[in-house]
Amino acid sequence: MSLSRSILNSLLPEGVFWTPAAGDDYDLLMDGIADNSEAVYSVMKNLANLRDPFKTSLLEDMELEYGIVPHIMDTETLRRERLAALMFRKAQIPNTETLQSKLRESGFTDVYVYANTAPLDPADLLRAGFNMTCGDGLECGEPEAYCSQFGGELLVNGDLFVMLPSYINLAGEPDVCCDATIQCGDFETYGENLIEITYQIPTDPGYWRNFFIVSGEVMTDETGTPTTYRFLSIPRSRRLEFRRLILKLKPLHAWGVLMVTWT
Image (cartoon, rainbow, N blue to C red; front, side, top):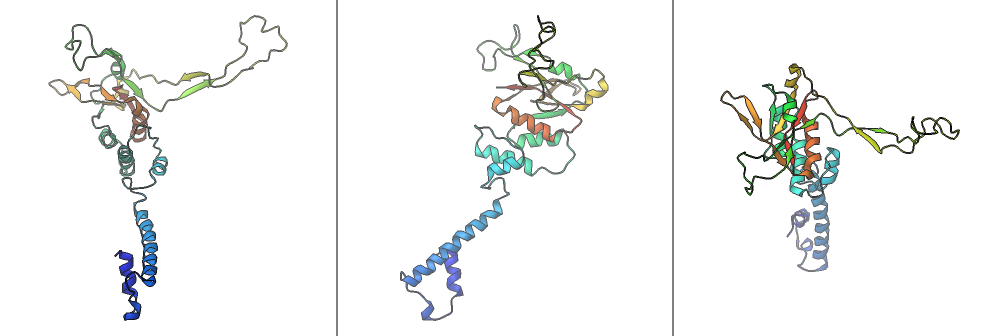
């Protein structure tokens, strides 16, 4: 007997007249009323979970609200963990500790975030190198040995581009100045000529403390000074998500150096 039917039975007056025989029309009517009440109760009960990232039935709507764009390969568990990490973040001053914590809660479990307290020249971290070179410790055939070039990646804003028009006529072309049909500024389309906005690292060491490093675990010397930041391996399918999460959580004035290989 359902809870709703038990409640209905308890509300009926006492007496044989109000006690339905099992299986008769009166009993079936009471069952129908109880089932309808149970359905309404179930819907109302689920409303309590509407804002719970682990139980909500409106997962896509919640992701849209918090600016999350899931990848087609993301599992539902990963999506809910990522949503919870954003929903339950406290109003704290952004720093490397909170950024590292939220990245790990979002599924990037091996990530480390370090303040550039040494400080090191960020330009040195951005210079490209190679995973395996002649004479080093890795040998061909070892599991960790693979030929690839790598380098750090500067993260200031999202990917920004300047769109330039594709002009039909340019100075220096033959007969441009003598053709009456040619108009100044005439162009075909926008968007084909894209110039990415890039940023220059300051040469003044006074600014280097405003950088932070996102990487694998750091290697230090005997004094505790960072010497090498291990590269972190992240699936390329999660690159946009990873960068967006850092941009959302990082201090506004800080620039990030990503020591990441996208696999």
